[in-house]
Image (cartoon, rainbow, N blue to C red; front, side):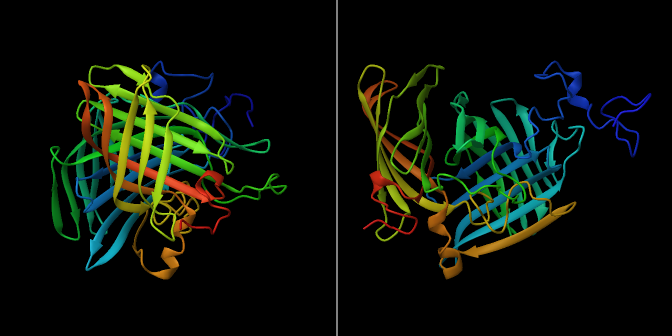
Length: 399
């Protein structure tokens, strides 16, 4: 507590300011408090970025990200590489964790150990660097192909409890640089290497599990999720949909952004997911969007490589790596997963899967009517019951 001569915000043990930091020199405040202090006292407050990179074969899929969790005092980063090794479908995960600066001094220099993200030009160009760590190194430059897309706010509640309350922006673009794994370098060139990224902040479950209090009422029966940011030559489409088990759509956001900056809404997309028989792993989807003129824009999407991001990526109840968990200063570990191994394969139906996505768009394009080819992220999860898909419970699968 504050005493005579001790302003609020002074660390009583060390007599140092723990609130004010370098960011407070800039006119960016939204609340009457230092920028380092989150606007919410909710322990689940977070600020995180996600990025992926792939060529157009699906031979290798890189997924990575970095997050700050100011109310938990932590920050972390991860790298997830999916590739075939000696006939096996493997996911290699690199996890890094550390303490976050309580004054927010590390927000301008986003770094966790040997991993860092440099903002070269805000909302357009980034540099992603991982100095060699456990046999993995990255030096990649991202260039956004179109303006970022501000998505609709994303809110989820369980009874009166807010599970998720977040704002995001997304972007499609190209990559250039080098990916190194165990001494082998792979050149990344912007003529073939593309990807998507998003940044989100707000409240979502992070850190160590805490006692939930009264059991949820009603019981959580699952959710259906589809996220498709897709890059075409003259435009990009960013689609995000979430539904409850009975098919009620709680989030519907689909826009098309053109190279000249024009943005159009694409209505209420109609979606048909195609699953591999006996699984919930999609092989593709048909997405029918509607332009403001009432014309149909149809996206035929196929999967080139599937990556369950709850296996080493830290999402959706990953038992090995949860974002925001304190694992000690300078934490580093590398893990490898064989997706055919029964204990790993058994986890796949219970989380979201990211795919290298290939799309063909039929209908009105940037220069008239025609078919155009695109690449990007095809992210889907059908968790638990979903009546429109015919999934009766958590264990039901496609015929």
